[in-house]
View 1 (cartoon, rainbow, N blue to C red):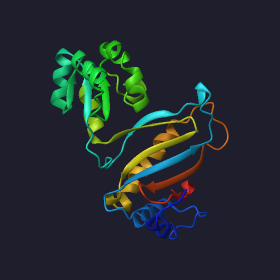
View 2 (cartoon, one colour):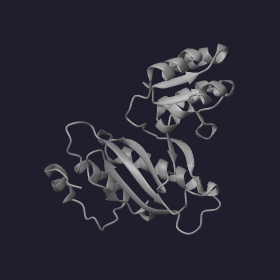
View 3 (cartoon, one colour):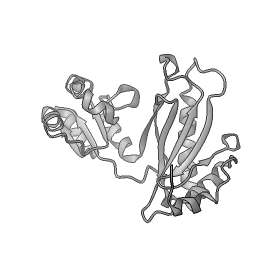
View 4 (cartoon, rainbow, N blue to C red):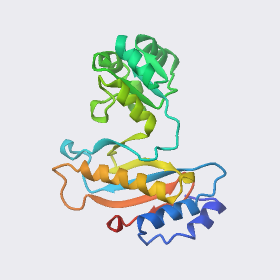
Length: 229
């Protein structure tokens, strides 16, 4: 893959064979982010599990101490009292059949998180083929199918992120923006890694996290020494 001059110059600041302590890694990610916009910082974890086995799946959510730096648009499938609770909690869109129809007929996906009360899952389920591939399908494991819609909305707005094992045995997750600075990024990073460690499947054997890399949107990857946390 051919990279531009900015990327090449930034990559010279990083030793591709060295594993940096977490704080130094955050500093390098910031130093090598050269885009004119506030780049997002992501963590990539290569896991020592096999995604083909149901008993080795990894999935969960974590509330980042400093949020993600992104304004999260929340949609809630609910009726009656729960609809009012969702609105009061700050949900951007609340409804039922009307929202489902808008998604189906108009291809509308102007939201980042979808939450549903259990009684609305028959409705949301019909949208599975549309919401699923985009990671928007409400799921009990991620806390987005719940009767406590108020808490779910507030947590989503506060910076709750979902992490899950992909087919390539990798977990990708956002931990903030370059503008956060190294200390806040480090706190978010530690919160995510701690959550992933707590989610270790009982069937997982050997080394659980094989490799950890952090990078900004347009920047080179920086390997992290997790034992230095």
